[in-house]
Image (cartoon, rainbow, N blue to C red; front, side, top):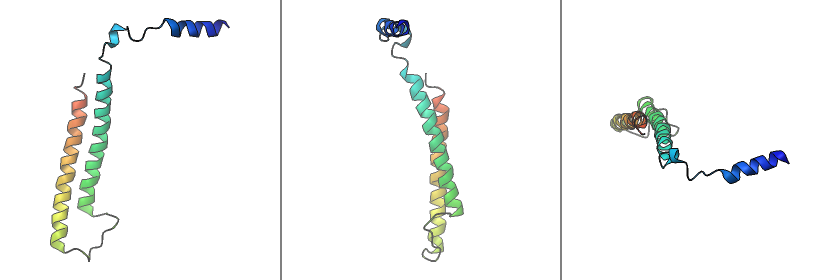
Length: 100
């Protein structure tokens, strides 16, 4: 009985809305963490896209279906797209440390 009264006393007297240290600023660390997490995922996706374009390890790839000029163009385009996504991920990673 004493333990239950102590817990109910704590929850009844706690005023979470009146705490001045969390006056609306607690959302920024969460946003920074989400930017960091998305930055890691986007960086990884960019590396995979660039690697797939260079090495052509796609699942449904048939070399006799596509002319060689199109393959070179797709490699170049896929590598460029992978690098752009990779750079965006790095920017998000670095930017997440400046969110306060």
